[in-house]
Image 1 (tube, helix red, strand yellow):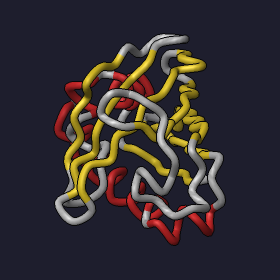
Image 2 (cartoon, one colour):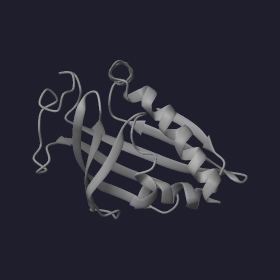
Image 3 (spheres, one colour):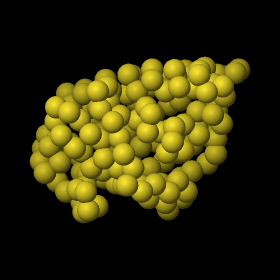
Image 4 (tube, one colour):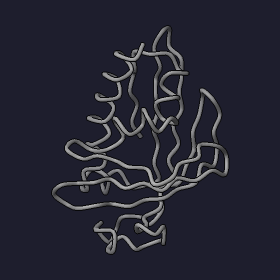
Length: 153
């Protein structure tokens, strides 16, 4: 679980999580980029994306939005896949064998004055997330998102 305080109202922060033109500017680890093959943000909607990492190569994922409650909450799965959208194992995706094939991500957006507290919870062991670098990547991604939100207002 990670929390972060953003200098923007909940509606704007929520939009940054759900609008591809904003999401593509921050939702990838440092030095990486992300492309969306498809994205439909609504309950039951799906996405299929690729994080391009110059060191480790491409990482394809897909997922389903289980809950979309503007501007309060997002719940979605993240499933390891290939470019065609087929589910793959952690090893096939270049992850450690302990990395789960599917993760559920819950994001809540809580107003605090003119700011928004984002609470992120993922169903992966924290130790595994730290070992893979995923845990640390959230902090740099949130810093980029805060810069984008500050300049977007």
